[in-house]
Length: 165
Image 1 (tube, helix red, strand yellow):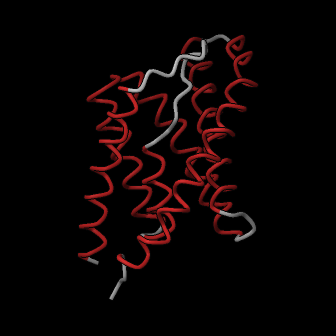
Image 2: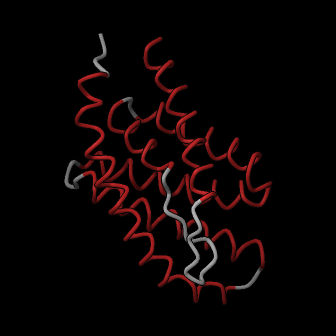
């Protein structure tokens, strides 16, 4: 257990570092809220190596601390809505064992954007923001696939290192 807690701390720190790096990468496709989701690499790796409760803890920690450091209270609200919905979907799909890590990640990317757009509609009290939904679903699919491929390639060597005794 102590090893998992230690690895979780390292993963949470890496997720924050990836969040910061992502802020440095200019990605302007004309639609607000579209990001690569680099920190989700860590969440997915944690889900597949450490387990659900550790991955959820890392995700929530990353959202709150990253929000405090980089985006403020509204950023935390949007990220929390997207992050928790995304995590619930990824957990459910992983548990079925019917989807590859790429499929789980893609669904996570899509539902992260759905959660954020639903929160935005709630905050601004305007459903017209749903017009962004098709673009956000497509961007979530693309980034989710990329994050899934990266995560899958990183998990293989990490599983050899992260041997739980």
